[in-house]
Image (cartoon, rainbow, N blue to C red; front, top):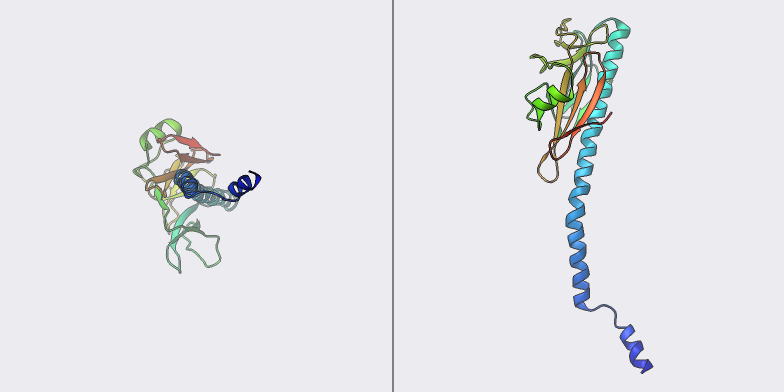
Length: 205
């Protein structure tokens, strides 16, 4: 009797038991992996939005310090793609200037008309400033540190005293678009927002 009991204990798992365990593992993976990938994708977009906000803050500080207007605009990278940098009025990008590379999957949408979820409600309800008609131009700051719309390669920075917004989107692993936004109030304060899956915007800073 003792010999029979020991032999049963040494048998290990049956094929059916192993199949059941494998099925459970596959079900858990199908549930958790997309969520992990979405979290990583959202983190990358938020990281870019935070760095873009930092460039804007740098432009604002330099504008006040040097009594001129500075903007954040884009330039083509030698290796391909696009990068964003702080641009002095009438100046051009010089090698070695701080540069924020734009990932190939991220798209930047200055101003309204981006197609972001609940965009019009978000602009009019969550943010208390006006997005002007020229908001597709480069966001900039005048010598007082207030937002304006910079015209590249000129000394013109019209529409001062109005805020502006830049939307950013990135395809998610599930095929949807993740959205973030960097908003600047008329007084020059930065706000970082992200949009959840239901179209609700959440301020992150």
